[in-house]
Amino acid sequence: MGVTVGHAPQKATRPVTAATPQEPPGPSEDDLAARFRSGDEAALREAYDRFGRAVLHLAISTLSNRSDAEDVTQATFVAAWLGRETFDPTKGSLIGWLLGIGRRKVIDRLRASAREARVVETVRQHPDPAPSRSDPDTVVDRLVVADELARLPGEQRRMLELAFFDDLTHHQIATMTGVPLGTVKSHIRRGMQCLKRRWEVDGATHGPRPAGLPGAR
Amino acid sequence: MQHMDHDRLVFLALGESEPDNGERAYLEACEHCRSELENLRRVADLGAEGQGLHDLPDPPDHLWQGIVAEIRAAEQLPTLVEPRRPVTAPDASADSPARVLSPPARKRARWSGWMTTVATAAAAALLGVVGTAAVLGGTEPAPAPSPQQQTVRASASLTAFGETPPEVNGAARVLDNGQIHLHVVNLPDVSGYYEVWLIDPGTMEMFSVGVLGGGTDALLPLPPNADLERYSVVDISAEGYDNNTAHSGDSLVRGTLTG
Image (cartoon, rainbow over all chains, first blue to last red; front, side, top):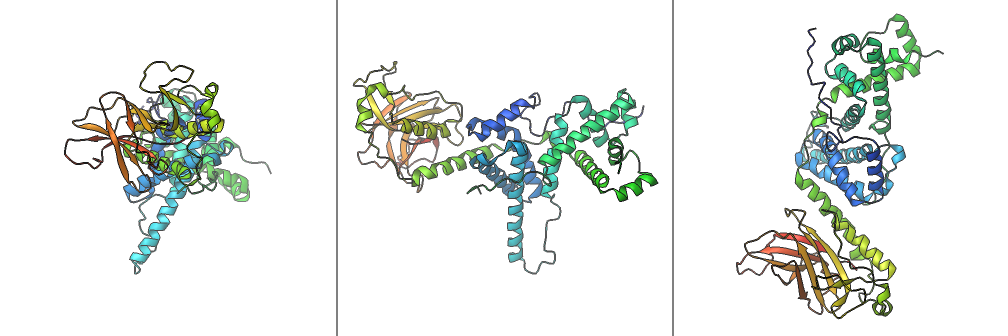
């Protein structure tokens, strides 16, 4: 067949936000969100175990300084916990909300360091240094889409991974997997719909903005 | 206007083919389909960029400890600034054994004691009830008050601090007779001894209450004028035999007195 697969499609993909690979997403997550909101402190630890990696990734890939990134991650969870009553599960997922808080803290930090840079180096020609870092909105969006991808039913996920990561055409996917072309197409179409919907709900561009968190900074 | 077939939009977004001339003209004209296509393209790009996000490294341990410490500090603030109820229990509740609830010695979840304290104390205050503790008895406390039982003025659950394993935990209770009862389990072996401190979390000023022996329980007298609203943090440290009376800096468990 001559198709090279760059990743291991048979390997189960772990949701960005899953604590363990075998943990099924779904109802338990709603439950976690509800417990978190009601102030069950065990839910904070669970949320951290699941979402801490994603929040830290957001901070690391947007801030140039590792210790700033850890500070922002810490501040995000502290702010989320202290402001947990402002979390509205009808407006998005807990991870989307946490990433929204993290995103705002990242932006605050970036602005603060830009101000410092201006003060320190008044003669700098480019007002916005450090172009190598990623844009916070894009990182949030990537995390949200990757998380949704990992939650799709197995076949849909597999087809989309082959299209995204291995850049295979629908025909190539059908040939490679032995799944009829029409089925490949419908899996991909449904999968794309799910990704888009989730992106619209939880993504940085569309997602809900966390409400004001008093004293949570 | 009839919109484009959605399957076709997905197809185009994934780069399966290029729009033909008719489609191109149509997309120029139809804002709805054009924006749908753009969104689908964006999602496809994001999906492709997300490779590798499923094996993100775990955050370092100190991050969680920092979160707990910061939340603990934040949640203490109100109790430090709010006017406190008088520490002495109302006579009515002290005299009515029927209203005394079960002893507060509860098993705590691994790490969660630090916030339960506040809730427990608040609930107790709400009911106007003070718990009792069977001091050093080790047996089932009798429902009726007996000479060994003392009214608890304030209590704290003690949870592992810093590098201490989470299974090290316990409780501290300040009794009406001016003594503090400490109960700690799973203390790690140390080369020296354990010392009990009361700390002012605002200034980190502290004084030593005494030494904890080898057992899990100890009853230590408090100075009669001890200001427990100020020195509200109970701390047990590992100390070496070094003729240094200051805190070693090696705290094993801590907890905040409430009540």
